[in-house]
Length: 409
Image 1: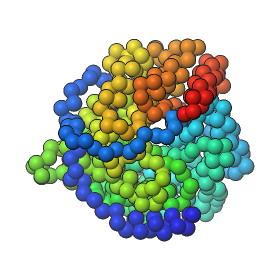
Image 2: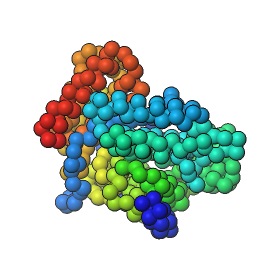
Image 3: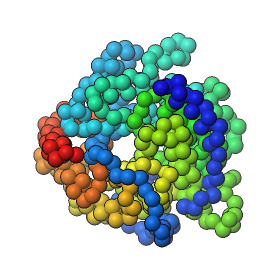
Image 4: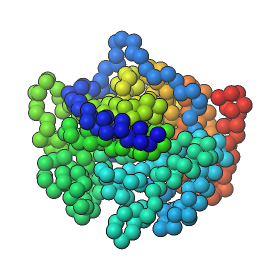
């Protein structure tokens, strides 16, 4: 199976050419801004993906979570990840969004990206074992789906990039000063600039590499798109007045083209691999700060199979109350599955997220009850922190999942 996928990957890599000319992190409680810069909703009926055939009950396992179990002892890592899977299974979860590229690096064997600094290596720099292979096999043995989660544009720090061997493309782009790797004010990490066609193709190639080498169920990426609104960031690529596009429209188009290329590259390897995107829950921020054309992605085919908006808000949030925001997303949708991202990390630590009241299960129930196809919890280490309050939350989530299974979902 992997051999066949590798052959398809080689073909797909050769045809990843597209145009960015398609039209199309901010504070979550910013005052509501009119959608003056967004793309209009389509005026024709669009054929979208069928609804998910089961309720998605997911958790994000971030590089921070993996850092707690990654040691040079392969057996200890296997045991640690198995314990994670068993916790998820007991809580009624069925899907894992597992970080495999957080900073232009890899938690797997890659010819395109260097190993993550968290992955143990020998004296030659080769990884001691393959975390993604172990995690995929372990998740499947527990009856869980594993989606490889990448941050497509965020890279290492300047010092870390400068220290990379020059056979990595990101290191070459950093060294040549072409603008494909650039800085964003206030951020110590460097970023790939999606306004360059070869950058977008490279990101898509990276997604295809994962799909060809590993038995993953999905490719998942989140809201790290444009790191800044600074006009200088992609000034070398954007020509004012070109094709009558504003800078905002140009950036929306570039990000959408990146998403389209990722989608095509993944499907060229295996049509059954799911592609999902997790934008901010604040829809206005997606347009004003990240240039993420979420309306288009929901209403047209070819960008994702489902969306996972991060609605990390309480019911009484003064700017983005949970239920109102959920309905905003549902009401712009055109029959594409919506999985609602929920903030496990806020329980008991922020107003509106009281402990002992089952806030996560209430929000999950409201998501599914209002026509969404599931929920995802951020993040693992918050959900399973060993506290009494989170023990109560996970028991309630497990009970909710049991009820869904009893009704045949």
